[in-house]
Amino acid sequence: MRNTHNYHLSIRHWHQSLGLTAIFVALLFVSSTPGRAQQPVTLRRIEFVGLKRLTAQQALDASGLKAGDSVTREAIDAAAEKLMQSGLFKKLGYKVHTANNETTLIFEVEEASRNLPVVFENFVWFREDEIARAIRQDVPFFDGTAPEAGTTTDKIAAALQRLLSQKGISGRVEHMPYSGNGRQEILFTVEGVKIPVCSLHFQGAAAISEADLIKASQSLLKSDYSRKNAGVFADYTLFPLYRHLGHLRAQFQPPTAVVEESPSQCAGGVAVTIAVDEGVVYSWEAAEWSGNQALTNEDLAIALGMKAGEVADGLKIDKGLKDVRKAYGHRGYMAAGVKESVEFDDSTRRVSYRIGVTEGPRYFMGKLIITGLSPEDAEQLKAKWTLGSNAVFDESYIDDFRQTGLREFMNGLMQRSHSSSRARVEVETKPDAQSKTVDVIISFK
Image (cartoon, rainbow, N blue to C red; front, top):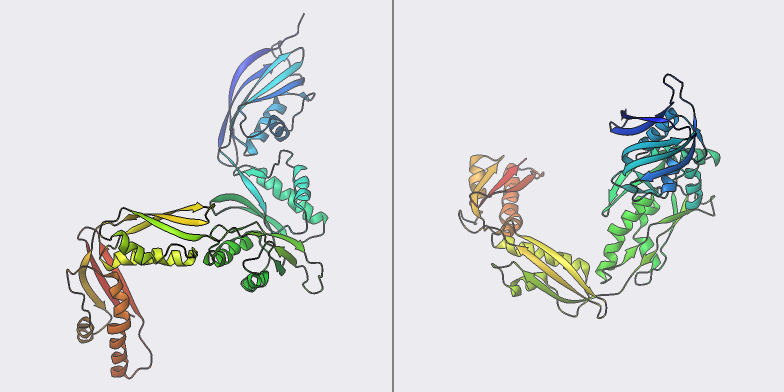
């Protein structure tokens, strides 16, 4: 006769240190004899229902259970709590089917919304595979990512700290979330240790010589190595050099670093390599405008300043787009916006821009307010301001006034006061969206 156990339904609430509450709905096994102490059973099979990104093996590794284990209800509860604390799951429940002291355990799960890529910021003494092996001793399911919440990141940090200790490397492991270039990651960094950048190498450089790239990267050579900082530097400082030459799609690969072979010349330092894919040189094709009414396509093309067939100098294009906004500001359109999209034709190596314009309302000159001067001096300065009240507001007039009327007034003020120091002057514009006017405030500090 089969010896089967009875079941009862139990709803339990588990509170974690993260402030999350996990609800476990479990069909728990009990002895068929009332009052009899619970007996261990053998896990015949473990299943997971609801997995999407994780594999069943990864989830099983995270639980710490394996088929053939002899378990009690408390052991299964502990495994469920361990799974929740890992941060891999948003919800989790389980049920068991037991017969003849053998149990099938079924976890019903809802995975956490996402895992983030893990980046090892400055672990220059180890290969990536060496780091991964060390982590999997504590986190068997590690696949290069980790959940945003839970204990997994702390376990990774502990494994990395142990790896440093085994190699006799001082420093402490810290971790933090990081967002940049549209990516979110978890950075693991060794703090409290100096890692000077001894040399730089740019693999794939041709349009710009490696020597010139190194010359432009002197600030990196004066700093401690950071994979993140070196990558950001390449994107924001070196990439514009390529854009200037028409290499609009040049790309830098993530930096790599190895311990310098000549430590006597650069103690504890590293040689950093940043590979670059320069791509092709693009020529300018055309700009297609939409949304403009106050300015014609020809007006905008003149402001943009690009001609068909010339090298698509990215810096010149950027300046041209700013000049388009200035052209609208010159005509009183203070809130005008420009949004561009880029179309590349690799067969002809040409680039076109689709530029949408939102002109907004036209603004007019409001009040001229001067503070920090005597009434007499304020009136003298106002006499030099020629943009009349209710005239179409010209945003460029302020720059012209700084160079002419304001400069002339300041020189006269210094002569009258017999002072060699020039007062600090701030010019502020205050648009009023309701009245469509712009007040100009000139403050003397």
